[in-house]
Image (cartoon, rainbow, N blue to C red; front, side):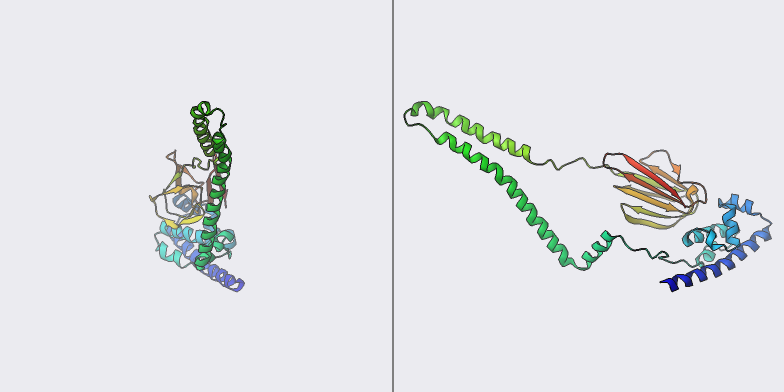
Length: 281
């Protein structure tokens, strides 16, 4: 793993040196300053300088570098996409591992027999629990049902008409008590949140909705996307100022400054409150 990462870094450094020199020569041929290019591309002048100097350690993650190279090349009128694609990126640069619950889920997918066992245990446990809940009220009904049958033989005319009254009344009240004793497991669910994204310029982004990756790639200028969120949404972009976000049709707002790498997190809480976090890289 370390050897592969080292090889990727060497390739990135060599290719960035070539691309940086190419972009610098094209800029100087047009007589443009870094400040002018920064205004045209919405990329900070320091980042443009780091690209030309091939200062890989001062630039963001490789996937963002590729996006910056494409925007810089487009401004200079070069074949920007072809140039950007020659910059190598590592698909898994940090050796990230799946969370435990995702790896456990993957194992279950590989062994479906385990799922059937779990389903069977859940079904048996549920049926047993319902049977126990229904059995306990019936035990309390039996003494009340037997009470009216004990009639004194000395006064049969008096006891006969009044005996059924407490019987019917007793048979109704325990039923009501049974309904009241059942747990109220139905709760009002948290309403889904609608998140709209619109790009004012080309921008790379990765979107995770409810813990799953919904999109990863570069969106061209004018692209509109929408996601329905039940729990949370996390958006990471390499050009925060070019991305407008709208939550539940509210006023659109940019995710950050132009050319900045930002991570935006929106969480819907159980009490209908929300939490928004922004992290700048």
